[in-house]
Each structure stands twice: as structure tokens, then as C-alpha cells.
Length: 492
Image 1 (spheres, rainbow, N blue to C red):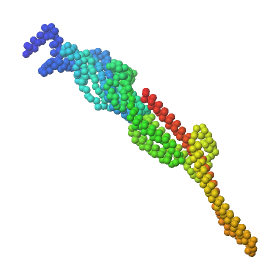
Image 2: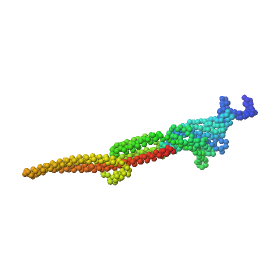
Image 3: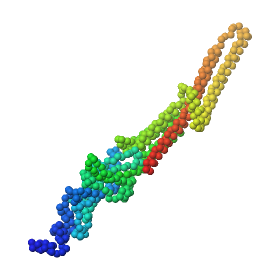
Image 4: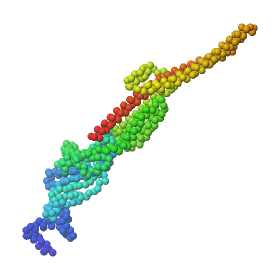
């Protein structure tokens, strides 16, 4: 046995071309079932004397260049309240290990092999924005080529801190950063570069799942060297992931119901102001909008430092509904008929009934006047009937009084021999005259009250038209402003 081994050694020394084979066989001295396994021999050859705790360079002054790449696969969650972004990315990094080099001719032309990650040196490149460990699959192997290039490819669920601006919700565009750097090694030991060009990285959306709420716009890259204490300098590669929210769901479920309720509030102004239906209608709309806000409050994103513009929009719409209800209450109070209303001041008559219809082209005054004139004609007819009855009664009473007085006078002239007795008729006539006078005063007072109510009704109608136009202009201007802002944000 010893002789055969000695003969083999002598053959390796004497036979030309056999020295390399003997060297490989010596390096990979596997026996038994792994004797002819090329990958086993190669693995043993690479692991022989390898120190994974030492940076794999022969000259310590040489910096290890780590090339990295990033592809976004999916946007899992955007937590506006906690300012956290959860993404699923495909991360790739490559570097050269000077101690993992072999000649493919010595190992059946094997040019790359997978090795356990725990058995090789791996750079300590981390993401600065990490706030939580995601549910990432464990990839225990790396690929090594014959020239020493190590490729470490793995998917990562990244839970990172991100400054989320929700002011433009639901037309917001978010820009979150993923900063890769070596946590310990300076630029003299580890430097960082890109595997692909920045242009290719920017436009690559080949693996992105584009069916969710968020749309990937592009990925920007930025290389920077920084120092913490102006002594040691570190290299970092920052990826800016730019995403945009798809607003269709929020437009249908948030904006359209609010717009419909505001349109119904505007339509409610066409109800007659002297009827009580407008007040109840406006109150119903206000209650409905309050319930709507309670329902959508959970849908709106919330942060401690800001409020989205759509939240301000809902608050302003609620304020407009309150203003509309207040205006309706005031108008109904003006046109309400009361017997103790004070006359309309002269300056109100001049400004509201004379100048305002001319300046603001209010063409509904003739309808109001015709309506009021018809009421006045009914009142005059009623007064004529009352006065005619009173005149007829008074005339008949006076004729009876005259006939009785003439009869008594003639009886006295015929010589009845006694003085003319005082008739009981005059007190009855005085009482009747007092009643008729009271009725006349009552009717005149009622006429004056109706004239005052008519003037206040005219003032109420004119003010109602003016306030409606002001309210309509405010709503339209507010809607145009918000629509313009959201359109600009969506295009940008």
C-alpha cells in the first residue's frame, strides 16, 4: 500500500503534464462516493484555508468595490399615520473575492458554483431607513464565478421610514428613499457602485406588479460620499422610489357624493322662501352630510403634522351648508307675516328694492308685485264688501231714525197735548256708529300691517336672490380652484 502510494508520487514527478492533475487531486482529496464529484472537489478546493472573516483582498490597500442593483416588485403598504412604507424588492449585489478563484480546466470546465452564504465573506451593506424586519425568504447560497466574482441575489420585504406628504390626497405622489451603505467599513475598504446604468434603472418596471393602488413612476439613484466626524468617509448609494396613488376609488366614494349633496343644496334655493319647506330641506342635507363625514373619516389618511386638502374640502363644504341654512333662516324670518313688524327703513327700500334689482339684473320683481297686487285686490274687495255692508246698515238705520222722528214730530203737531218724548233710537245708533268705526280702524290697521309685510316680502325675495348668487359664485370658485389643483397634481 505504501509502495503504491510512493509509485504514484514518483509518477507525478516524472511524467510530464501530470503535475497539475496531482495538485488538484491533492487539494481535493475526496475519497469514496465523492471521489469523482467535481463540485465537491471544487468546494473543498475553495474552502481550504479560506477565512470568511477577512476582507478578501491580497493587498489590504485595495478597496473592495460592491456593485448593487434594485428592482421594485410590489408596494405592499403605505402607512401615512406612522410614516412607514412597506415594499417588496429584488436586491442584487456583486463583488470580487480574490480568494475564490480557480482554473475551469482543472474542474471539468466548471465556471461558476453556488456556495453557502455562511461560508464566504459578505459585505455589511444595510438600508439606513430600516425600521422593522420584514417577512423575507432566506436565500442561503451565493453564486461564485471562476474569476472570483460573487453574486448575491435575494428578495427582501423592506419596511422603511419615509416622509409621506398626504396634502394632495388622493392625487399624491410619494418619494421614498432606500439608502444602501456599509455600516462599518469606510470607503478605503468598501466602495459602492451600480450594476446597471442610472437610465436603465430609472425606467425599469419589468417586474413591478402594476395592479394595486400605487403606480411605480421611476427609480432614481444617487451616489454620495459622506463623513460623520470629518475623519472617516463612507460611500452610500441612495435609491429614490417614486410612486403615485391611483385616485379612482377615492373619487367615486368620496368626491362624487359630496358634490351631489352640494348640488342639491344649490337646487334647494329654488324653493319659495316664504314656505317652511326650505328650512327642513336644508337641515336634512346638513344631517346627511354629517353622516357622510362620519362614514368617510376612517378612509382619510391621518397624520400628526398635517391634514389632506380633501379634509379641508369636506370641512368647507360643511361650512357652506351651515351658511346656506343660516341664510335660509334669515330670509324666512324676513318674509314671515307678523302683525307687529316694524316698517321697512327708507335706506333698505332704496338699496334693496330700487338699486339692487337694477345693479344685479333681478328680473323676478314683476312676479312678486303681481302676486302681491293680487293679494291687495283681494283685500280691497274684502274691504269694499265690509264697508258696503256697513254703509247699507248705517243708511237703513238712519232712514228708520228719520221716519220715526218725522212721525213723532207730526204726532206732536197734531195736538196730542204732551211734549215730544225722547226716543231710545239715538243710543243704539251711537253704538252702531262706534262699532263701524272700530271695524274701520281694524281694517285700516290690517291694511297697514299687510303693506309692511308686503314690503318685507319684497326685501326678502331680493335678498334671497342676491345671497343665492353670492353663494353660487363662492361654490363655483371653490370647486374650480380645487379641480385645477388636483388636475395639476395628477398630471405632474
